[in-house]
Image 1 (cartoon, helix red, strand yellow):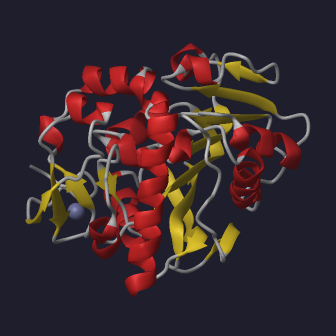
Image 2 (tube, rainbow, N blue to C red):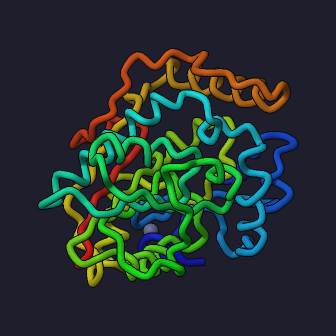
Length: 294
Ligand SMILES: [Zn+2]
């Protein structure tokens, strides 16, 4: 087994992966374990147990029916505000408004709405394994990258990379579809081991990046196609100690409750310190990276 970020083979076995009981993901990817790379500290599952067609099938069907809170349509405006923060991060490195904005794994389209607010007139394009999530939009074109006849100016992957079996190979494929000078924008959870360890469940994430580990992955494997401009964090400011455990527990209960009742429960856990703009530190719950295509 090789680290998906740095290719080291030196791991700390961190024990069993925690599934939500009865979750569909467990049927698609049973018996996973967690390993922390000693070199770059990316925590990851034993990826060799995963099978790509099965993973795609899961995301095309069960994923959004599973009550994963991040994938629900609830809290749309808040997600748009997060998307505006992401679009502004890309805008810092563009000379002019982009012609088109592409979201890979677009879900409920909040980031595309954000792009429209930041750059009125931009062409909005996306794909998603779950076509039902995007089929009823009139402002967004569903366009698999392989079928596009041109390269895009901005490509966003928001909470996608941590789901992929081989993130480097996928980023290299996506690079072919970004115009030279164009922008790659990434947001993933910010997950050093203590934070991974504190989670009540891990599914369906399979790689847990830190600010340093995602930067190392780009430097080591992708420096010929992307130049990383900036990394930082956003989102909730991470709590520590007892406060963190209580909050994670409440989150877990919320997800179970949502699954059992299929009611959209919006933010029963208060978020006192929510940041939408990118901060140059490690404190936020999500991690951002912006790179230009060479
Ligand atoms: Zn590594």
